[in-house]
Length: 213
Image 1 (tube, rainbow, N blue to C red):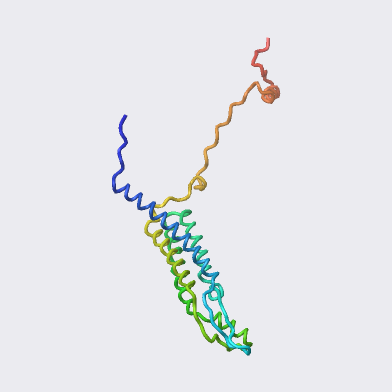
Image 2: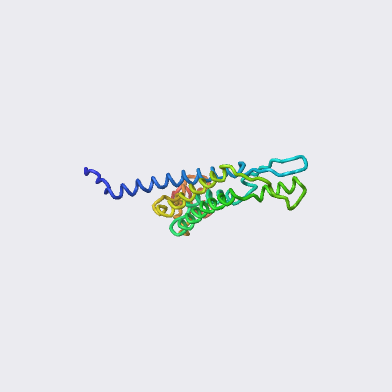
């Protein structure tokens, strides 16, 4: 009985690096999408508008400011799952979509931090003046939380681009490659079964196998 030969150290290190990058990408992508979606539902900006009764407080959520981060977070989450459903060139393309989704979230969130258009619309409704604008403007930390979420998705995309070729794919037993499947061998007929005996009688044969006297 021969002892098993241990794999080379380089292969072992590559396998560990592949598993580690896979775990980090999955965690980063899922966490980044969750953080981004949560951040877009929070208050991003606040200000005041002057009405006849005095200053009027206004607030705007992330989804009121821009819908891009939430939409790209969903795209990124779908791309993260699709990475394991495709191979080779398809995996590279999906990985690029994942990275671009993260970069887009970061850009939209940073731009949204200084965007007062949502508050201006509220000020116009509150004062009845379509040209009214918010008197004072400030933003919360939630736009930067969405930026962090986008950075995590971007990290997952970059890891997929770098190490995705070594990651496993979904099981191929459900894939159809067009090759005909082997047919099961037909079970031999049992001459003692009633239906087989009736078939033999129809053919004029003796189902008992005895020669006539």
